[in-house]
Image 1: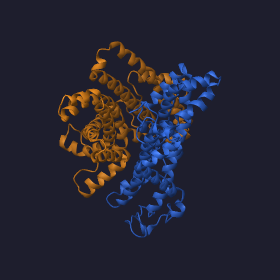
Image 2: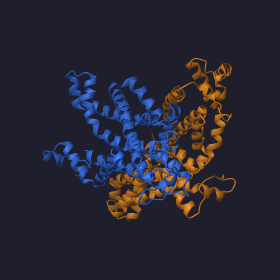
Image 3: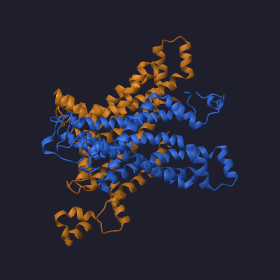
Image 4: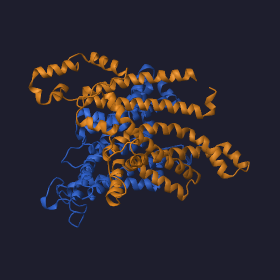
Length: 293
Length: 315
C-alpha cells in the first residue's frame, strides 16, 4: 500500500503523464484493448473503402447465403452483405458510445463542480436529483427517455447521455469537495481567485484522471445501451445498419441463418471488451496510490 | 437504531419527490399532442380530441395535472393504461412475480458462481487461477446479455434441442417445466452480475486477507482453510452482501432485454410493449415501480449492513 517514501517516479524526475503512459503500456491487455479500439475506429472511418458491398443494397439472388468467399460474413434476409453492414454498423455504435459519454461529461462535470464547490442548498438539490436518477436502473431510464423522445439514433444518444450523466455529477462533486479542502486550493482562494477560476484551473485538472477512467468504462456501457435500444427498435432505424438492430432481425432467422446473429454480436462484444480493458488499464496507470510500476 | 432508521427514511422522501417530478416530466418530452395519438383514426374530429383532453385533464395547467397524478400515485393508483384499458398497478402486480422468479434464479446463479470465484481468485492472487477467473468475469461483463441469450438459444434449443427457445410456464402450474423455460434466461441474466460479484468479492477478500487479525490467526498456526473461511471470508462478505442487494435491482433492468428475447411475459416485456403501443402511463408506472424497488433495496442493503456488521450494532 502507500509508503511514506517518495514515489520512485519522482526520483527519476518523470512527469505524471509520462509515468502513466509507461505504466499503461506495461499493461498488455490494455494495450490489446487500445489496438482493438483503433482498428474499429479505422473500420468505421474507412467503411466505404473497406466494405465489399453497399450496406443497403438488397439482392434477390443472394438472400440468406451462408458465409463464403464472395460474402465473408454471409448475407441477410434481404440479400445484403453482412460484413459491409457490420463495418458501417461500427459507425453508429462508436458514435453513440463516444458522443453520448461526451454529452454526459458536458452535463455532469460542470454540475458536479458547482455542487462540490458551492455546497449548501445548491449541493443538496443537485445531489438529490442525481440520487433520484441513479435509483432508476440505467437501461430502464434510457428506454423510457428514448420512448418519450421518439425512436431515432440521435434520441437514443441523448437518452443514454442523460442517463449516464449523474455518475459524472457524483464523481466530480466528490472530488471537488476533496480538492476544496486541500492546501493548494485554499492558497489559490486566499490569493483572491474567483470560484469559477478555482474550479476551472485548480480543481478540474486534478480530477481529470478519474474522470478519464470513468468515461472509458461509461463508453463501454453506452455502446451496450445503444445496441440494446437499437435491438428494441428505439435506436438506429432500418434500413441503416446498426449492430443492435441487426441482432433483432437475426433473431427471426436463427434456425435458417445463425451467422446473422454471430457477427454483429461478436463486434459489440469485442468493442465493449476493448473499452473495459482500456478502462481497467487506465485505472491502474493513473492511480497514484497503486504500487505497480 | 430507530432514530437512524427514521433519518434514513427522511433521506428517501426527497429522492422520491424528485423522482416523481422526473417521471411526470417524461410526458413533456413527447413530441406532439398525446390526444392526437390516442384519437388515432378519429384525430380529425375536434369533439373527440376535446373529450380525450378533458378526460385525461390534458387541458388543465401542468401543476394541476401533476397534483392529480401524484395524489393518486401515493395511494397506489398508477393510472389507467391507454391501450389495455386496465389499471397500471394491476398490470405491474400481475407481471412482477414472473420477473421476480427470473431475477431470483439469476441472482442465485450469480452468487453461486461469483462469490466462490472471487474467493478462489483472491486466495490464489496473481496465479493462473486468478487470471482465468478475472478473464471469465471480464467476458461476462463485456458480453451484451441479449446476444448471449441468442447464442444460447442457438446452441441449446436450435442445435441440441435440449431446452425450449421461448415461452414461460408459471411455477405454480408445472415446476419442472417452469424451470426448463427459465433456466436459460436466468443464466443469461445472472452471468453479467456474476462477474460484478466476483470482482467485489475478490477486492473485499484481498482487503480482509491483508488485515492484522488474519496475520494473527496465521501466526497462531491455524490451518489456512480456517483462516480463509472463518476469519477473512466473514468480514469480506459484509460489503459483498450490501453491494449484492443493489445488484439485484440491476437485474430488473437486465430483465427487459432477456424477457424480450425469450418471450417471457414479465415486467420487462410490459415496458417494451408499452413503449411500442405508446402506452405512456404504463411506461411511467414501470419506471416508478422499478425506482421504488431500487430505493427499498438500498434501504434493505443498509439494514443488512447494520445487522451483519457487529461494530455497528451497538451504535
